[in-house]
Length: 189
Image (cartoon, rainbow, N blue to C red; front, side):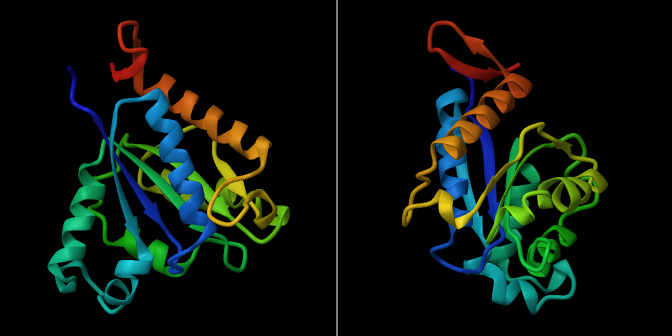
């Protein structure tokens, strides 16, 4: 049996119960229905304070250095950020500023964001895609955006958003692997 695809989700919210985290988990669940994955979640809510106090990577605590290494060695990254004043949070960008220059070259990145209204939906195209384009990542074709109306507590409740999540996972699987007819799971090509 082939090794699972290492997927690291980076959550750009500093709130422990954020819609961004809920969306990312829904996307990881959808990915796991299409690909054999080993998932890991990096949350700014757990590392943000110490990350923000470090100006260069050498100042980071060992735990955060390990998280950066997991991100760099991932087969795929799910980058999920809340929208704040029309863009992703500065601390989210600071985390990616600490990543090795070539670590994202050709790395598949699935993009997701949450915001207070539909007015921020283009943050994926105008903020996140250029960031990962600069890092020379392979941003996957379908991004996912959610608003407060799409959630019921700690779950995605909007059928259209659930369809978008499923589509993003299917398209990611098509880029990353091929179907194994015996297991009906996607495997790395």
